[in-house]
Length: 52
Image 1 (cartoon, rainbow, N blue to C red):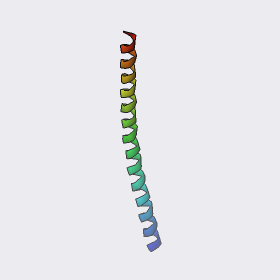
Image 2 (cartoon, rainbow, N blue to C red):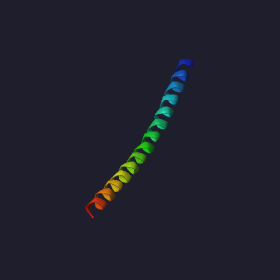
Image 3 (cartoon, rainbow, N blue to C red):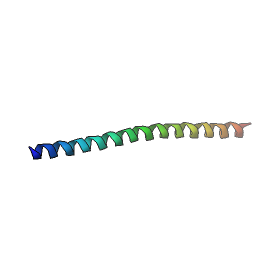
Image 4 (cartoon, helix red, strand yellow):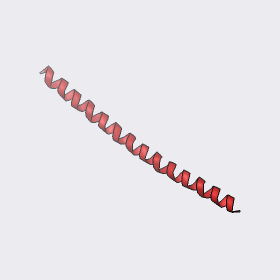
């Protein structure tokens, strides 16, 4: 019975950590997309200014 409880505790901790890391990865993915969009806009502004 104790081995079952320890196993369930370890599985619970692993799943909790995976959930936290996956949420962090989703958050970083959105931040990365925003940075890419800002970089593209900045590049377009420089390109347009150079043409005029």
